[in-house]
Length: 319
Ligand code: UDP
Ligand code: MG
Image 1: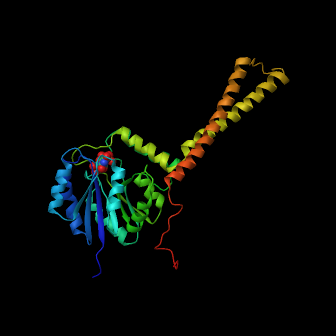
Image 2: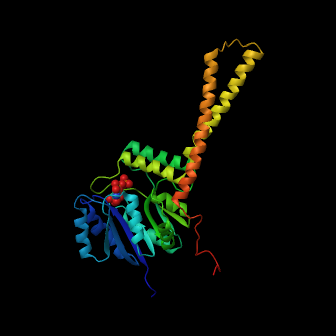
């Protein structure tokens, strides 16, 4: 028998004292133990202020495969996942929420797809089981907008329940931008993607840390970090307004001063002024949008993303 592969299971926790023990011991570990590979379980404590840390430290004392990466304060789920991936030693990493909404019993399916060659396997929510109507609509709107804004690679409903191969982990760890949305970045990286549909369960215990305000910020961050379309929209609007008011102005001059107002519109000075001001506003919007584009280029430079990512497994005879 060859060397067994190692899977790093990463789970971020923030104030999960109520359900974490049950989730780890009764749900996650039994599944992990049955896998046909070795595993390490990295629990990232994201600045919990309740008993979570104490509880998971006890769990780690009982099971040496459980590792605890405790952050100095609450950084948010995205940085917590990045931290876990930085410390993962596995041939692949699987990220899973600690609240039971992403069912551990599906992990063997992720492994199966990984074994047959996929490098990124993403769990896709098959039904919208979020509680609030606003969240439901918000999430639909989010993916629509993301798509419109040029991110065509993120499948609607994709979640952070995903397995990524070592090659993807390595490339992900090279990314240095700070304002990061794990989902968007991993999709940006490319590689062989597969999807697994699952029903997003209800929270086993405790309360979600993400409220509508936080989700809204996350959505805005996704747009801003993954696309420049918001900047350009106003430029196009400006062009539309400028051209429109220019035509209107031309019409006004020809109608009134050359043809002698045959349509009898009686456009007076204030109408002319309004058209002129609209014209100027259009110009302003265009120039603002151009400035914004320069800023977006600076933004892209500071993100410092690699120009390209090489798939070494598929490349040949390079050295
Ligand atoms: N989480 C975290 N840091 C935070 C917020 C959440 O590590 O600042 C963890 C949380 O403990 C859970 C997962 O991220 O394991 C998903 O969080 P939550 O259930 O609040 O979000 P939702 O299910 O609404 O996506
Ligand atoms: Mg949750």
